[in-house]
Picture 1 (cartoon, rainbow, N blue to C red):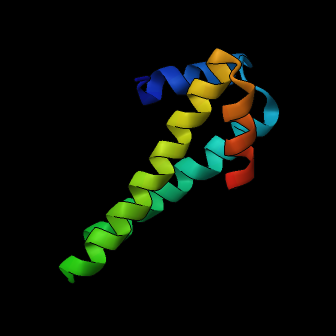
Picture 2: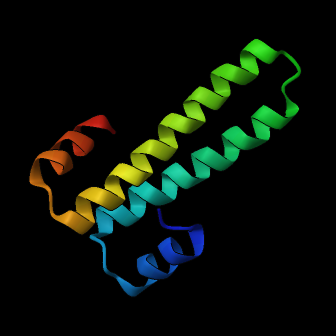
Picture 3: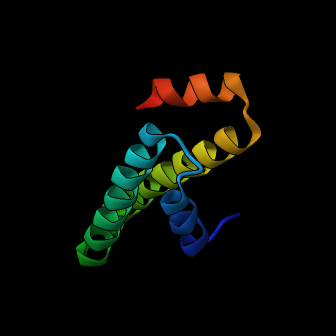
Length: 83
């Protein structure tokens, strides 16, 4: 799995299409926002719901990285439809 520094470096180098850069950037902002909300939340049930949403966003980011790096057209179409 790629760490944030590697992903940021690759995004700067232009190895991914522009739509992937934009989508991942927005997803990263959403993940950070969810992290802040999780920290502030006092209700454990609500925290678990927010953590599930955060994990879902992270899985989409990982899926985009796999689809783009392997040129898997089926996976790419599936992920494009998720947005």
